[in-house]
Length: 122
Figure 1 (cartoon, rainbow, N blue to C red):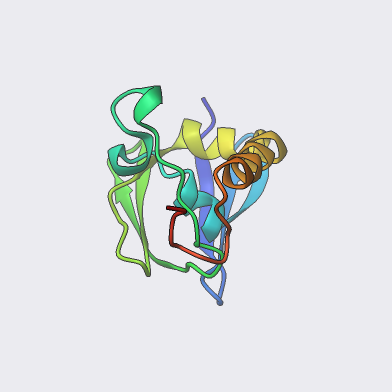
Figure 2 (cartoon, rainbow, N blue to C red):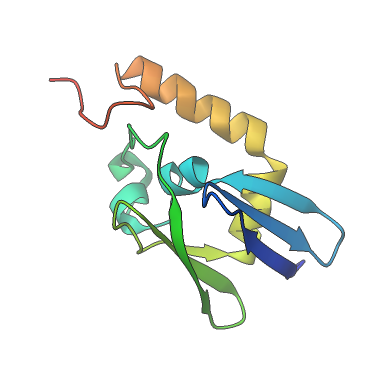
């Protein structure tokens, strides 16, 4: 398992750049990190409980706290801060970015939701 050698939040707080000791470097948007949060609030306790999170296009990262030697807890300006992002999960988000992001966008579309609006269809 690779470990991060550097984790940096951009000045505008919209991108988290993670450099791994393996040489991989991933720039992960705050929006992607928020909507794919590993928290139970988003992921549920089983796949059928997973929640689609709309309206986070402008979300910002407000904190990054270490969790032991294996993860970070990321806080966002919408007050979400319960996701524990392991090194493995951050690496997965970076290496499989295009597929994961496309799946999220398709899910929004299928449910009549948008990146811009947080309200859910009735």
